[in-house]
Image (cartoon, rainbow, N blue to C red; front, side, top):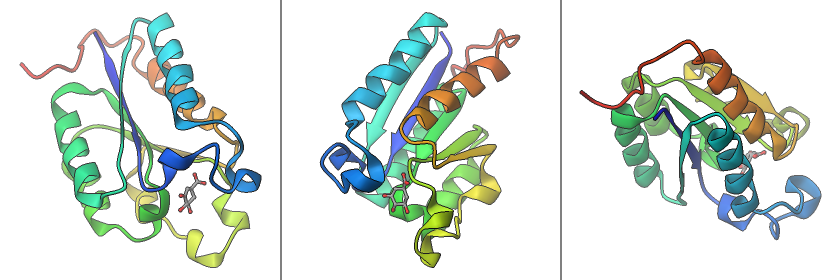
Length: 153
Ligand code: DHK
């Protein structure tokens, strides 16, 4: 079965209570359920992981190279700082869609730069939590003719 990895970085475990004016009322659990439902309907499997620790996110990206067709990734604040996460994405042959709930370009200038965007397949920014679902649909559509389930041989 084809698999997607839903990866969330620091502070995204607090969705629903964290700055609701910026990030909304939807929790990470809600997002995982919504994305999992889309995957299920299309015969895909979803793996989901959140961490507040950069190295754990690097490890999850490395693991994805054995199993996942694509990575839906909100790196949180690491978007703007992490060479390690950028190198991890560059180092695995798994396309990544970068998702931001808020429109980072309307916010503080330090959020305008993403170290990850140049190594992403695409970005979805500022559409709220539905961005994660749109990313899943984009992957599923992209791989619809692909019969390889992505598992390591
Ligand atoms: C989430 C964060 O935690 C911030 O550090 C980013 C991003 C924006 C978001 O909009 O999902 O700057």
